Amino acid sequence: MNTHINLDKIKGTPIFKALSRLSVLLILFIILAFTTHNFIKASNLSTILLQVAVYAVIAYGVTFVLIVGATDLSAGSVVGLAGIVTALLLRDYNVSPIVAILAGLATGLLCGFINGICVTYLKIMPFIATLGTSWIFRGFCQLIGDGQPVTIRSSTNPEAAEFLKTLGSGRIGGFPIAAIVFLVLAVVLSILLTKTVLGRNVFATGSNEEAARLSGINVRRTTICAFMLCDVMAALGGVLITARLSSGQIAAGTGYELEGIAAAVIGGVSLMGGEGSIAGALIGALIMGMLRNGLNLNGINSYWQQIVIGTILIFAVAFDLFQRRKNK
Image (cartoon, rainbow, N blue to C red; front, side):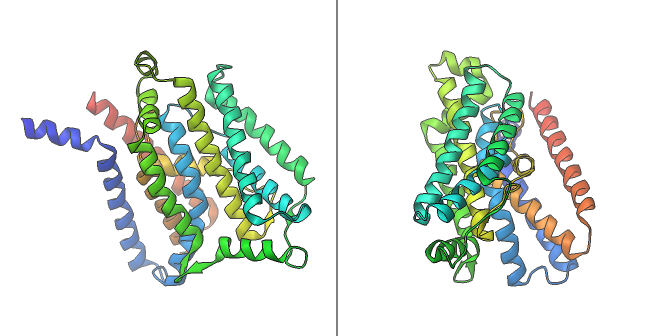
């Protein structure tokens, strides 16, 4: 009897959920390796990691917001805005790449702060608040870029062009630098989420906001911090896209907020709040990236890819709801 209870407790932990998703990832990898030509080539695996990098960092940020019991539909617009800001500073003001990247990340922090204020102080539902700010941020993106891509050319700023090329498509020992960035971030953010006061407050707020407030947790501050983390990760995604393309695109990040949410949910992050892990979000992003790549190599067009990933997302949410009802 006690063994059965202990097993049920173990099955409900974020670590167990992440491991269960990892088994899905491994099974998918084995299937694609045996059924898809060129899938396990080093060049293709490297391409998968490059493609996953942006979705993964967005999924990390979205994880904090989902766990705290909210959602952020503006992340895709923040991707575009941060990318444009970074590219514009490099092209028109000839600042150092580090300063431009920090400015792009600061843009994400500001966007997250605005979202957090709208939700906590103005008491607007997260869905509506971030839907509105997504239009605002995208509008600023188009205004700043004057409706045109902002391209960094080696002839005008060779230092910036070389730095972006290294960050966006460079490799260390054959391993993409962008992949190193999102893997290191996974470790850092996992520690932040599980080993710090902020992380514990995020879980407590998402599990039961009123109980968290009564226990002395500053729920408003915790929620604002979650939004700021979400959008600074989205901004980093915008920087990575700008680095890969050597250009800030006004349409960059369109729909990426949904990709980030899908990756997080497929990785076991609950839409109801209070549950999830960075490891799960990483695995979810890898599952999506690997699946897209496999479908592309097999000649499946993008329309069917959307149908497949949408179906997987529905099953992931349904499974989460089933598990919650079962554990009650």
